[in-house]
Image 1 (tube, rainbow over the protein chains, first blue to last red):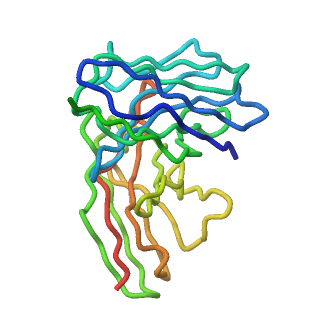
Image 2: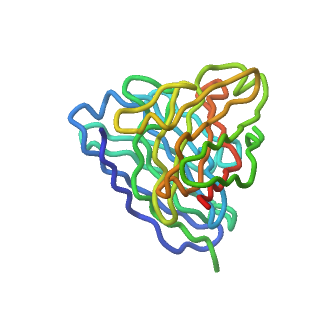
Image 3: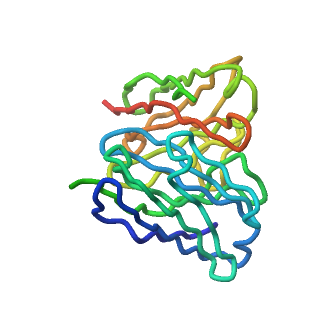
Length: 120
Length: 110
């Protein structure tokens, strides 16, 4: 099982930028697809983005395309979410999630989440 | 994509069974056998309970089971226990490495 720890959340003004980080403890981190999922306060879950094992493929929910970028550094066992042009509706807890080993069909292990608040 | 439709809440007494439905379309639930279910206690991260429609990760009690018919998936909790009180979310693969979650269901143990 992959252990995940997110960091980088906080208060950001509308139109601003933020970078979320996720540190993974897994000896074969490079074998996992990785994702970000968010949850607005009191609301449901929403898949945001995911990235292939080698970083060559990235996919996003329509509402963040062109504003958010997912990336990874397998040498550092880390995945990132670069958030630009943030909006009030981006306010949420952001969870880092590893997909089931070798697959891209199941969101498996979850971090504890990091809260992003977009407000002036 | 639109969120999958779940009942807002279900309830049952200890020992009873409850079933949560998750309705999508032929582009998600009906098109793939990649439906998963997550349990979320207040203030906690979600936990995978069922994947690939019917499979249980190791450590998940066999009281939890999943099924699918057409565009609707279901999670059944048999022998309901107090610790099962939580929010439950379904999730389906929706093609091209996209995923869609359900609206969420609050399970109350009476």
